[in-house]
Image (tube, rainbow, N blue to C red):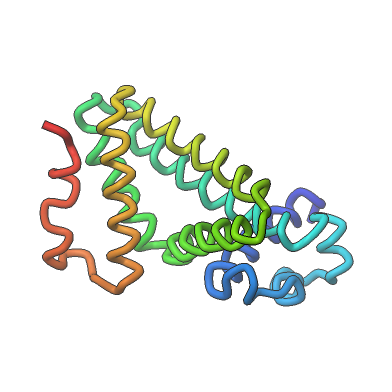
Length: 181
């Protein structure tokens, strides 16, 4: 395996480990063991634990952005929002660790910033801004529709995190009501 392939393997493993254990509850030793490398090798790929977490968070956001873009690709504007919503529901159903990683990312940023580390949050915010910008373009540049779509996405994150199954009454009219009149 090349160093780049190993790095990607570490990022995917880290995403899974951080999703379940959070930043503080996950050791680099566990990540290294999961990938089958030594900790010293892990630190040749990444300078520190925070860099590993950041890479996992950025991967999570970037691949979610790709799912939205793929769902919207080639569709008429009016069909994009429902297609993107459906793609996201499928994504978090098929890959629940992604949702957990998203939530852990928000917690890690808040914790880092409460300790005075604004740089970490800035890096995550840049990735999230790229997600917002991409969705904004895919939804025709409408600020209200973009904001509403992402707000409903956060509602889905909350419902799933709390254990509400798809089809529960809280999901009724979910994305139909996301489209502004």
